[in-house]
Length: 116
Image (cartoon, rainbow, N blue to C red; front, side):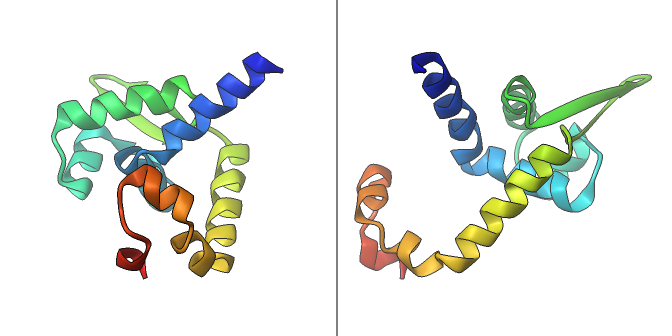
């Protein structure tokens, strides 16, 4: 049980980073993309995007397909796509209470009133 908790914590931590979540949502929306395309869309450095893609790949969120000198990234599989879609629906339904969560606000170092 302890190992599973650790793995789940790491998996969800991968998705809790703003840049990694942005990459994930972008790939959900656009489909397969190169690092260069992701870099241009998110206006971040190529090394930063590559670093985050490596984490997402290790955690099973994205996969890579090599074609010559290019690497194409996409959402790992339909289960990941479903999980993100479910999370989006939960967030939409509970937006106000999520934004009012004092525990998370404290962990992120922001005031609850700033989020509303």
